[in-house]
Amino acid sequence: MSRTRNKFSPEIRERAVRMVGEHRADYGSEWETMSSIATKIGCTAETLRRWCREEASRRAGPAALAADEKARIKALEREVKELCRANEILRKASAYFAMAELDRRER
Image (tube, rainbow, N blue to C red; front, side, top):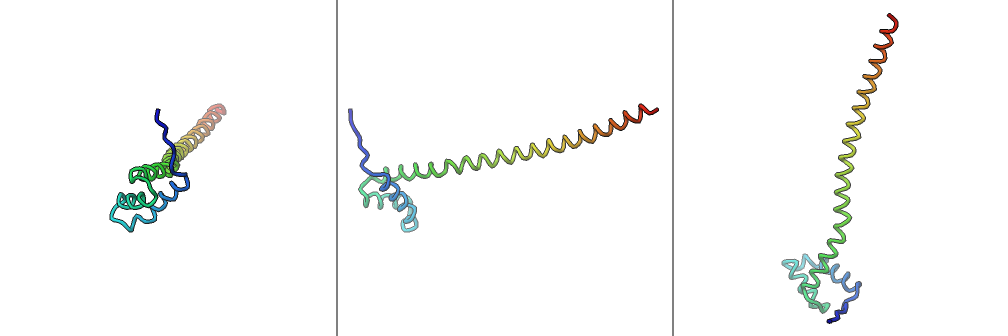
């Protein structure tokens, strides 16, 4: 059974990912940026790419939920508005028929 040990601390990972974001404009592509920074910290470019993707998915998780929640809230607000209109119509119809019933009993 092989044992793998985590060679890089979370602080080094965070710093490397942050460096990729900061120096992206200095290189022709994101891969070039990752390759350059990976050699400086002593890991492979693929490892650094994986760290960057993990960080991006961590950041996008709540944002994606937020967008989904916004759409859900908007749909619920539309439904509430429609139900309020229906209640108003029913309230007016109820008052109309109640008045008609009162008029009929007087005769």
